[in-house]
Image 1 (spheres, rainbow, N blue to C red):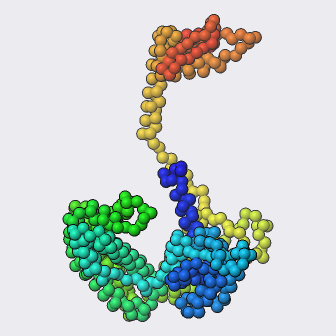
Image 2 (image 1 turned 60 degrees about the vertical axis):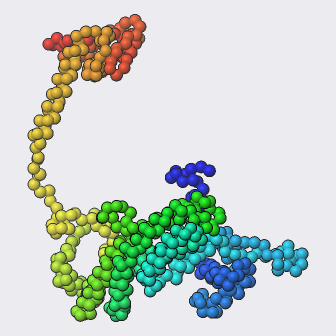
Image 3 (image 1 turned 180 degrees about the vertical axis):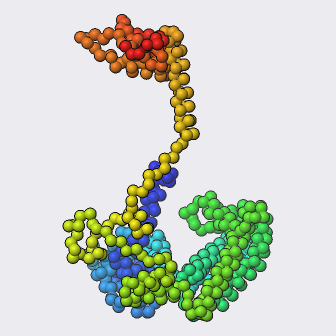
Length: 519
């Protein structure tokens, strides 16, 4: 097994692709038929019937839709002939498992031509339940689990007693019940506040529908907030009592009674430890500082914020009913008025009266090539014209105008001149140092090397062979003169950047005379 670029084993993305392929039936072209087939498997599973043939699936579809538990797909029956390809496709996606059915064969020929029977794959059943849960989700089902708080407290006391007595089975069952109850509490709270947020933000709600439920909604949230404030300290104390009986022993007993045989003892222990840590985080602050808050405190703050949001919505609804208009209704009426205006001038007048932004400008321009646009073409069908910003903002054509004032940056010019003079002085000093001795008998520094290379560039302009022979050449710069003379063999000049090898050439540098120049 190799590792992928993100550090995960390469098998993990493949597993994710396989699991995501399970949801292909929800977006397929025949998704309604796939849902009818899977709903039949789910109903048969509830009746303890696991294996289904295509004929059995058709019968279960008829039972489910005839019983009125779901709405039939436009009353169209689904025969077994059409169900067969659907079952095969669901099997290819991994939603269903397939096996041979030999019980229907009465002869050897029938056995050889035996049919398949299908059943839910474990992951496929989870995918179907997820899609079915999304389809069945309703805002009206949102609620807060207020009555679960005393049950959590009683289960924590039971868990402490069971762990103290060493009753492993009771520890396992109580811890499972606590985990399920807390998971349900968190899921219900998340669903409730998301639904409440949609209710507060929506503009489609009517005052009548909101006022019919606002009293029950506010009472429900206030009761939950008060119960949470009353039970949170007691639940935190109960968690402390459980921890005093020994968390390691608690986790070990729960993992020992866990019936997930495909997981090792250590994996089960890690899983139960993470569940206990999650339960503890809900009611006990993670840090020791007083500013740290637990999930229960944050949930109570969210409840108080939700109550304030509902009261704000109630105030807006009340004002709307009292005044008869709201911002939304005013904009709708204004849009109707714009549509009903008889002329363009009246629309401009209404626009100016409502928004006070001034009338739109009317510009008259000619197309650069008027022959390309016939006069019979309407303005909407004609290509757009580019206009200048000045013409659009002021209504006047742009002109050249007065020349812009030249901004002088004397300080910048002065700094640049000083830098140029400093560089020139450094080059002059390096050139004077270069002419003091032979360039072949010492190591040249960086500045001396730069001056030498500039002199070589000046001298190389006359470095042109004539009749197969190159005479000596010279070049001058920064008050020194470089003379290149022919010699036998190669010469080497040592610099701070490395060695400079010259083939049949020797260099001499001396100060230039006052009339010096390039020769």
